Image (tube, rainbow, N blue to C red; front, top):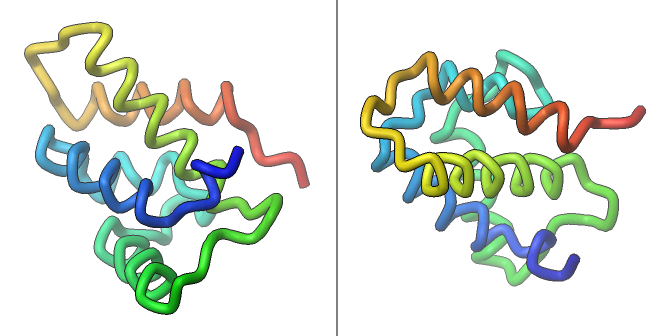
Length: 104
């Protein structure tokens, strides 16, 4: 679980997924703020943690966000999708929420 507390891993996933076509709309599907978070805002938060040598807190919802991002990336790579539309990213984000729900 240590890997998932590292915000640098989230930054790598964001870079990779954004390059593949991840949009703010799709990202907001999987983020725990649900509709109120952008890639740039989350990236900034993670960069601030990295710059201070901090990690996500144990049981942080940001750990789930990272796991969701990783699942979306894994599914895209495994599926060898060629039509990387916003709709595809949104559907994969929805799947990631099912796999990694936030239990309040």
